[in-house]
Amino acid sequence: MTGTIINALAVLAGSAAGLLLKWLAARFSSRLPTGSAALGQRLQSIIMNGVALCVLYIGISGALKGNNTLAAILSMVAGAIVGELLNLDRRMRSLGDWVQKKTARLTRGEGGATVSEGFVTASLLFCVGAMAIVGALENGLTGNYETLQAKSLLDGISAIVFASSLGIGVAFSAVALFLYQGSISLLASVLSPLLGDAVIAEMTCVGSLLIVALALNMLNLTKIKVMNLVPAIFLPILLCTFM
Image 1 (cartoon, rainbow, N blue to C red):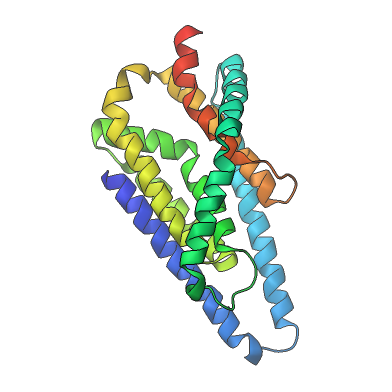
Image 2 (tube, rainbow, N blue to C red):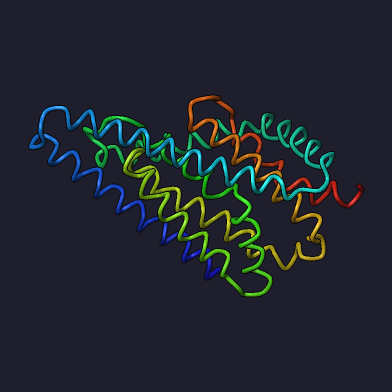
């Protein structure tokens, strides 16, 4: 669990830094020359696009690690069916809306993205990646958390950018990350007999495909309900046993 705790704290620290930057920008925007506000918005937009492209690169590079195309396809199809039946996307957004209501006084007067949007987007980015799964398993099985340390650095930097754009909802994603990765670490010893190299490779592949979908959403090219595809990440554990 040590790596997960470090990761969650990194997201909180990055979110705090991003919110501070957002507050400073709003605080001093009136003192800046005419047109500076528009420039700031354009910079924020292009930075978010740049981050989205980096997320896309991470997703593509991870997806190429898979070796069993059929397992990936079946995992995505079956996972989509399970996620859609459970309507995980709606449940996740409902949770985000609940968080937004509880924190309404903290975000009063803010424009732009809702708390729900920031919470859902950041939670998906921080949780569905290959490093989240592999790092949590490694931490749970061996106590080594080097992978999660590297992930913490990446997530912390991403949280700064996301929080400066999407607001306080990004900070609450640290709770989702802690519960998700912590659960995987605690269950790692139970799942270890099922987690061979082939299974982990396919879980990495499927999780990375979801990161690609998230990046496309961030670029406003698609509106994929990524949360409804999350069950697909765990289906290679079953499929690779029979394939």
